[in-house]
Amino acid sequence: MSGGAGLQARTIFAPATAPGRAGVGIVRLSGPEAGSTASLLTGRPLPPPRSAALRLFSDPRDGEPLDRGLLLWMPGPATVTGEDVVELHHHGGRAVRAGLLAALAAVPGLRPAEPGEFTRRAFLNGRLDLTAAEAVADLVDADTRLQARQALRQLDGAFGQRCAVWRECLAAALALAEAEIDFGAEEGDVGESLLAPRLAELRGMAAGIAALLEEAPRGARLREGLCVAVVGAPNAGKSSLVNLLARREVAIVTEIAGTTRDVIEVELELDGLPVTLLDTAGLRESADPIEREGVARARRRAAEADLRLLVVDAREDAAAALEELGGDGEVLLVVNKRDLVPEGTPLPPGALAISCLGAQGIGRLEERLAGAARRLMGTGEGGGATRERHRLALAEAWGALDRFLAGHGRIELALAAEELRLAARALGRITGAVGVEEVLDRIFAGFCIGK
Ligand SMILES: Nc1nc2c(ncn2[C@@H]2O[C@H](COP(=O)(O)OP(=O)(O)OP(=O)(O)O)[C@@H](O)[C@H]2O)c(=O)[nH]1
Ligand SMILES: [K+]
Ligand SMILES: [Mg+2]
Image (tube, rainbow, N blue to C red):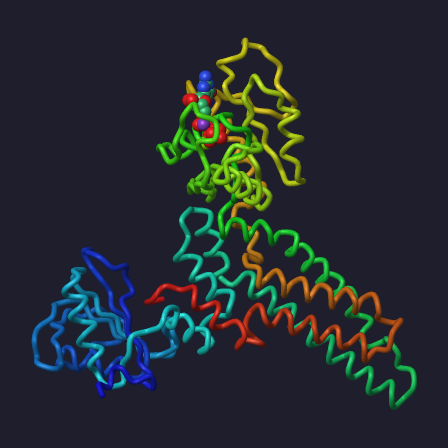
C-alpha cells in the first residue's frame, strides 16, 4: 500500500491556490511529517524557520526534477494550523502542480487534505474559535467589499470574544448561585445576597444578546446576499428592467405577455453590497400549465424575498397591482413606461417613475435599491451573528437568561440556576467551547479544499 493513501496519515497537503494557470501556485503541508517531506523533496536540510529559500523540488521516487521554487518552513505551534507547516511556492502551471501533488501523495504518512481540514485543525488546536473558522470560509467566499469586511471583523474575533466573555460571566454567576444554594441549605437564609450584585450585569447581558439578535438578520443577509424579487403583471417590463440593472441581456424581452416562465437569478453588486435579483413570470391567471407553474414559482420566490420590486405599467392601476400582490413583506413600487403617459401624470405615494425604453430613472432606482440594501444588510460593522446557527444559539441563551431573571427570587434558586447553565451552554456552542461534535462536519463541509 502506498503510505500516502492511508487514512491514518497525519500529515495533509493541498494546493492553497486556485486551479488553473498562474504566475505562482502554493502547495501547503501541515502535520508532523511536513518538515521531513520538505527535506525529502529538496534533498537538503530545512532552511531557517519562516524565511523563504530557493530550492529545487524533485520527485523522491526517481529524483526527477519537478520545479525550482521557494520553500517556507514554519514549525508549530505558532502556525496557521498549530502544527508544523511547509509551503512550496511553485510556478503556477498545471503540470508542475500535478507533479508535486503526485510526488507528495507517494510519501508515507501524507495524504490529500479534506475540504476545510487546515482550518479544522486550526480550530482543534485552539488557533481560532468556531466563529473565526466560519469567518475564514466567508472571507474566501466573499464577492463584495462589505461581505469581506464583515468576514474580516468576525475573523478578528469580535463576536466570538463577546460570547466567550458572556459565558465566563454566566459561569461566575452560576458559581455564586451554587454557593448560595449550599449556604442556604446549611445556614438557613443567606438568601439572595451572593447573586444580587450580579443581577444588573446579567440584565445588561440579556440586553446585549437581544441587540445582537435584532442585528442578526442583517448579518445573515450580508453574508448570503439580499434577495430582491422583481414582480408584476405580464408585460409590465420586468425583464427589461432586470436587463438594465444587470447591464446585460440575461432575460428574454418580447411584446408577448407571458414571456418569462422560469425564475432567472442575477447577481449584482450595489455600493459594495451583494444583491440577487430575481426576474419572474408575470402574475396572472393562465390556462397554460407551463405559465401556471411559472406564476406559482414567482409567487413563492416573491414571498421569500427580502424585498419585492413591483413593476407596474404607467397606464395600469398601481393600487390594484399592490393589492393583487398581497403579502406583508417590503415592497418598492416602480412605475414603468412613463414615456407612454403625459408628463406630469401623478405618481402613487412612494413610487418611483422609470422608463426602460429610454433607460430613464434607472440611476435613481439603483440608489433606492442601494439604500434599502444598506438598511436591510448593514455595512458589515455590526460584528455580530451571521449564520442561522449563531442566531438560534443566541435566541436560546436569551430565552434562558430571561427566564432566570424573571424567576430569580421567586422560584427555587436551583431551578433558576439551571437556566444560567443553559444560557452558558448555548453561548459555548457559538464559539465551539461545547457541543462541537454536532456542528463540525456541517461547518467544514462548506469549505474549499486547501483551506
Ligand atoms: N414604451 C415602453 N415599452 C417598454 C418599456 N419597458 C418595456 N417595454 C416593452 O414592453 C414589452 C414587455 O417587456 P418585458 O420586459 O418582456 O416585460 P415583462 O414584464 O418581463 O413581461 P413577461 O415576462 O411577459 O411577464 C416589451 O416589448 C418591451 O420592449 C418602457 O419603458 N416603455
Ligand atoms: K413580455
Ligand atoms: Mg419577463
